Image 1 (tube, rainbow, N blue to C red):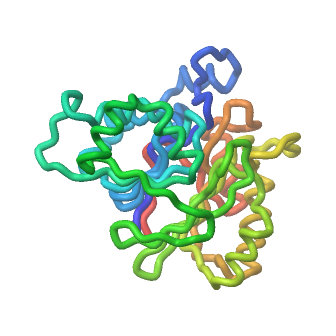
Image 2: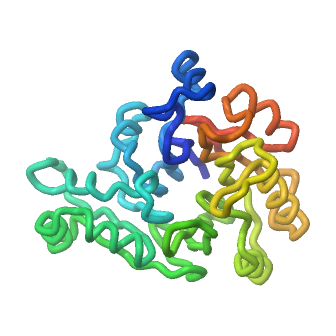
Image 3: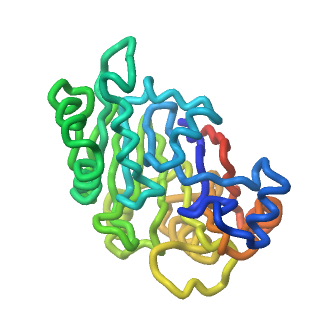
Length: 281
């Protein structure tokens, strides 16, 4: 399996468009891996995770070919993970596809409602009527199959209704992609234990980077990442071969600039994501 991190920032992006903090100013000067766009990833060039407002930029900068993507899984309805307005551009007149195929979008009720409310009603109904677009309702802890992958939505602890994160499995390998969530709810740990899961790669929300005390619920920092890693390892859900990645960074986090955080995270056994990072296993 392969995962490509297309965007690795929280909602503000780095640099934030109205921000003059030290982190954002450094990103403007150094560019490269210091620049972070809104979070989005793709598995094996097939399973697209989230559809943020920076998707168009990812098409331009990372060669993301949305005409070849037929499966999209959405974590929640915040704009930096779901920008439904852009789906209008798939409709006839806005796009001309050489081969007609359906884009399957999977999400909870709150996610699908956001798509229905934000897309043009006439355009959405036209796409749905001819199967250009298919909206698939999912439930937490109930696996579904898409393009040969087994995908399970897990309960996220986040400030958006019906927020989830995902376990993605194929051919005996598994990815845990856990973003926009606090330290996992006990129901998630129970699910791991009951289903005897093992992860080859774990990508964790690290919005506040090296801040010691979060002060709110909904995201994680490096200390939380380490706690998740230790518990997964203790449960035999991960081991020394498991690749752990810290991802989804805010400019408000401590030591969040790429070169600084990379050295800190490496000592804890974590890769530091950056826009364009590819990891295969």
